[in-house]
Length: 117
Image (tube, rainbow, N blue to C red; front, side, top):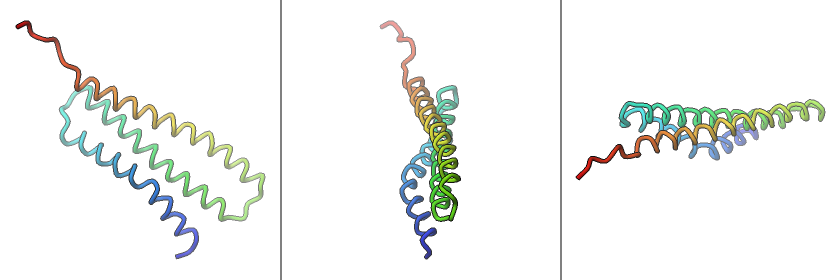
Protein backbone atom coordinates (compact mmCIF):
# COMPACT_ATOMS: atom_id res chain seq x y z
CA UNK A 1 0.00 0.00 0.00
CA UNK A 2 1.35 3.44 -0.85
CA UNK A 3 2.19 6.07 1.77
CA UNK A 4 -1.00 8.08 1.30
CA UNK A 5 -3.22 5.00 1.61
CA UNK A 6 -1.56 3.98 4.86
CA UNK A 7 -1.87 7.53 6.16
CA UNK A 8 -5.61 7.59 5.39
CA UNK A 9 -6.11 4.23 7.13
CA UNK A 10 -4.26 5.57 10.19
CA UNK A 11 -6.44 8.69 10.25
CA UNK A 12 -9.59 6.57 9.96
CA UNK A 13 -8.30 4.32 12.76
CA UNK A 14 -7.90 7.30 15.09
CA UNK A 15 -11.41 8.59 14.31
CA UNK A 16 -13.19 5.23 14.23
CA UNK A 17 -14.02 4.84 17.96
CA UNK A 18 -15.72 8.24 18.07
CA UNK A 19 -17.57 7.61 14.84
CA UNK A 20 -18.81 4.22 16.01
CA UNK A 21 -19.93 5.66 19.36
CA UNK A 22 -21.86 8.46 17.64
CA UNK A 23 -23.56 6.02 15.25
CA UNK A 24 -24.51 3.69 18.11
CA UNK A 25 -25.86 6.62 20.17
CA UNK A 26 -27.87 7.83 17.19
CA UNK A 27 -29.29 4.33 16.63
CA UNK A 28 -30.18 3.97 20.32
CA UNK A 29 -31.99 7.30 20.39
CA UNK A 30 -33.75 6.58 17.09
CA UNK A 31 -34.98 3.11 18.01
CA UNK A 32 -35.53 3.02 21.76
CA UNK A 33 -36.05 6.53 23.13
CA UNK A 34 -39.55 7.79 23.77
CA UNK A 35 -40.73 10.41 21.28
CA UNK A 36 -40.74 13.97 22.53
CA UNK A 37 -38.63 17.09 22.83
CA UNK A 38 -35.90 15.34 24.85
CA UNK A 39 -35.42 12.70 22.14
CA UNK A 40 -35.40 15.38 19.44
CA UNK A 41 -32.69 17.33 21.26
CA UNK A 42 -30.68 14.14 21.71
CA UNK A 43 -31.01 13.20 18.04
CA UNK A 44 -29.95 16.66 16.91
CA UNK A 45 -27.08 16.72 19.39
CA UNK A 46 -25.72 13.31 18.43
CA UNK A 47 -26.29 14.12 14.74
CA UNK A 48 -24.20 17.29 15.10
CA UNK A 49 -21.51 15.30 16.87
CA UNK A 50 -21.46 12.68 14.11
CA UNK A 51 -21.38 15.38 11.41
CA UNK A 52 -18.49 17.16 13.13
CA UNK A 53 -16.57 13.88 13.48
CA UNK A 54 -17.04 12.99 9.80
CA UNK A 55 -16.02 16.49 8.71
CA UNK A 56 -12.99 16.32 11.02
CA UNK A 57 -11.95 13.07 9.38
CA UNK A 58 -12.37 14.67 5.96
CA UNK A 59 -10.25 17.63 7.03
CA UNK A 60 -7.52 15.31 8.29
CA UNK A 61 -7.45 13.40 5.01
CA UNK A 62 -7.41 16.66 3.03
CA UNK A 63 -4.52 17.98 5.10
CA UNK A 64 -2.56 14.77 4.60
CA UNK A 65 -3.21 14.99 0.86
CA UNK A 66 -2.03 18.61 0.77
CA UNK A 67 1.21 17.65 2.48
CA UNK A 68 1.83 14.92 -0.05
CA UNK A 69 1.46 17.39 -2.95
CA UNK A 70 4.10 19.76 -4.20
CA UNK A 71 2.44 23.08 -3.39
CA UNK A 72 4.29 26.24 -2.46
CA UNK A 73 4.59 27.39 1.13
CA UNK A 74 2.29 30.35 0.47
CA UNK A 75 -0.48 28.09 -0.84
CA UNK A 76 -0.11 25.80 2.17
CA UNK A 77 -0.19 28.77 4.53
CA UNK A 78 -3.46 30.02 3.03
CA UNK A 79 -4.92 26.52 3.02
CA UNK A 80 -4.10 25.93 6.68
CA UNK A 81 -5.51 29.33 7.68
CA UNK A 82 -8.84 28.29 6.15
CA UNK A 83 -8.60 24.83 7.69
CA UNK A 84 -7.98 26.40 11.10
CA UNK A 85 -11.17 28.45 10.80
CA UNK A 86 -13.14 25.40 9.66
CA UNK A 87 -11.68 23.42 12.58
CA UNK A 88 -12.93 26.06 15.02
CA UNK A 89 -16.42 25.86 13.51
CA UNK A 90 -16.40 22.06 13.74
CA UNK A 91 -15.39 22.24 17.40
CA UNK A 92 -18.28 24.64 18.01
CA UNK A 93 -20.65 22.15 16.33
CA UNK A 94 -19.24 19.36 18.46
CA UNK A 95 -19.75 21.41 21.62
CA UNK A 96 -23.30 22.34 20.59
CA UNK A 97 -24.06 18.66 19.94
CA UNK A 98 -22.81 17.66 23.36
CA UNK A 99 -24.82 20.39 25.08
CA UNK A 100 -28.00 19.47 23.17
CA UNK A 101 -27.55 15.81 24.05
CA UNK A 102 -27.06 16.61 27.73
CA UNK A 103 -30.04 19.00 27.67
CA UNK A 104 -32.25 16.28 26.19
CA UNK A 105 -31.01 13.80 28.80
CA UNK A 106 -31.76 16.26 31.59
CA UNK A 107 -35.27 16.78 30.25
CA UNK A 108 -35.86 13.05 29.92
CA UNK A 109 -34.70 12.24 33.46
CA UNK A 110 -36.27 15.20 35.25
CA UNK A 111 -39.04 13.97 37.49
CA UNK A 112 -42.43 15.53 37.12
CA UNK A 113 -44.44 17.09 39.94
CA UNK A 114 -44.69 14.76 42.92
CA UNK A 115 -48.15 13.64 44.02
CA UNK A 116 -48.91 14.35 47.68
CA UNK A 117 -48.82 11.25 49.92
